[in-house]
Image (tube, rainbow, N blue to C red; front, top):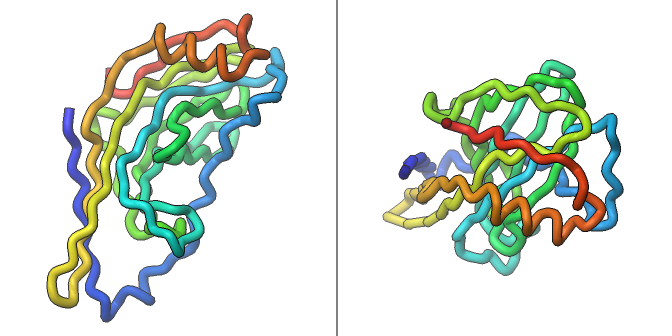
Length: 188
C-alpha cells in the first residue's frame, strides 16, 4: 500500500506557516517497568529521509496522531534510526487515529491531514497489555523548483509482522517479556 501526501510551500509565505513544534510522545526508556494498570502500544515506524545537519530533529518526518477518550493525545513519530517504539497510553481508553502530522527537520509542523479512511480506526487499549499497531515504512523527499519547496511524505509499505516485531520489542524492553500482547492493526 502506498499513500502519497504531497505538500508544497512558497518561500515567500514560509514564516507564516510555522505553527509550532510537534510534541511527539516519547518512546519508553528501555529500563521502564510495565504496570498492570497501564496500556501500551508498539510497532515499527520507520522513515527514510535526508539528514539535515543543522536541525534540531535531524530529518523531516511524519507522525500518527491519536485522540483518546481519556483526553490523552498520542503522537507517534516516524524515525530514521530507532523505528521500534513502545509508548504508554491511558488504560481502558478508546483512541482514534485522527490525523497525519508532517514536520520539517526542526520539528515544526508543516501540514496536518485527516487520517486516510483505510487507516482510521478506533482502538480500545486494555490495561496490562501491549498492543501491536503494525510496521510502517515511509519516505520523505524535498525538491526545490524556483521559489517553491516541494516536500512529499509517503507511506511506502504497511506490514503485519506481529511475531517478529513482538519478539524484538520484548528483547529490547526485557521487563515487558511477560506482558501479554495483542494485534490492533490499523487499516485491517
